[in-house]
Image 1: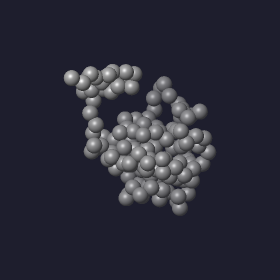
Image 2 (image 1 turned 90 degrees about the vertical axis):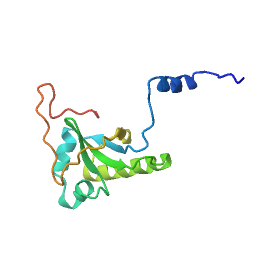
Image 3 (image 1 turned 60 degrees about the horizontal axis):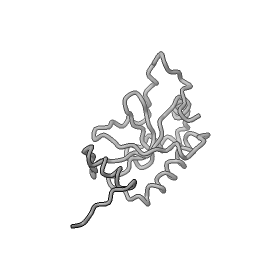
Image 4 (image 1 turned 180 degrees about the horizontal axis):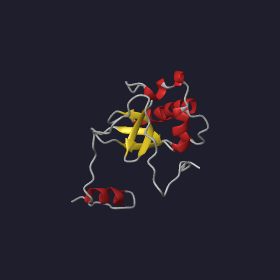
Length: 144
């Protein structure tokens, strides 16, 4: 009878199984950054010739999505995107962000997020105004 070996590498996997986690092969991912006050201002003042990079309806370049009160800009990845392609997508997102919002400091700002099936995309040319929260300010910036 085979004996199962549980060590530091397999223990986290077993913990995931015990919690009922599963792989969702149909969920899209999003590679992007949270739109802070400075970036929102840059997007609003972006020259018309560069607006195609985040306002195109076909999603060829970047898309602006919303999650609760936060907005994010980045690229939607199809379900089960190959891992070797993710680095190319990260570089592409970074390059486009540098063009439309120059001055970002770190490529590490780009994160992967799981998308909800009904996640809305903003209509071309519109970004929501920051919600007025008494505990935050327009210069709120997670990337300092």
